[in-house]
Image: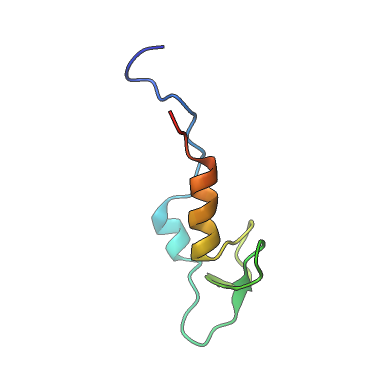
Length: 67
């Protein structure tokens, strides 16, 4: 395996600018985290599986490459 090739594939993520469009404004209803049901920072109609910041961080730790 060449040195510049990553050990683990990097999952596709939407661009940060695109995710900013889905952030909830103050007072706007928010989506529930699909893992713990806590409120997220995203609007209630965000596509996909929204995660709260804590679950998002834990999910990133679980899926991180330990190489």
